[in-house]
Image (cartoon, rainbow, N blue to C red; front, side, top):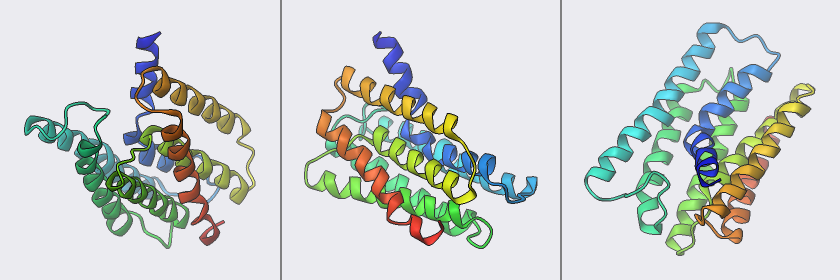
Length: 201
C-alpha cells in the first residue's frame, strides 16, 4: 500500500501542474489553436516548469540545501519555491501571448499567487501541501474552462476529483502533512484561481 501511495505522490507531483493545465486548456478549448501555437506554449512550459526544476533540485541536493524530492523541512522548501516563482514569471512574460491565450495567462498568474502565498506561510513557520495546492489550482481551472467554453467535461472533472482524494489520502498515509496543511493547501489553490477567474470567465 505504501508503494501505491508513493506512486500517487510522484504521478501527481506539483511539478506537473503547470504543464497539465496547459495541456488541458488546448484539449478543451474550441478556439482554433494552430499546432505551431500549441508547440510554442507547451514545449517551453515543459522545459521551464519540469526540466529546469528537476535540474535545480539535483543542484540544491548536491550542495546540501534539500534532501528529498518531497522537501519535508520548512527551511528546505524556500529555495525550490523561489525558483518555481521565477520560472512561472518567465512563462507569463516570455512564453504565453496574453492576446491569444488569456485563460492560460491568468491560470499561471493564479499559480504564482498560490506559490507566493505558500512562501509567505513558510516565513510564518507553516507549510502547506504543495500537492493539494496544485490539485486545487488544476481542479478549479478545469471547472472554469468547462463553464467558459460551455463544454461538458464532467468525466474529466470527476476523475480529477478522485485523483485529488487519492493525493490527499497518500499525503496523510505517508505522514507528509497534517489535515490542516492539506486542507489549507487545497483552499489556497482554489482561491488563487477563483480571485483571477473574473478577468477571463
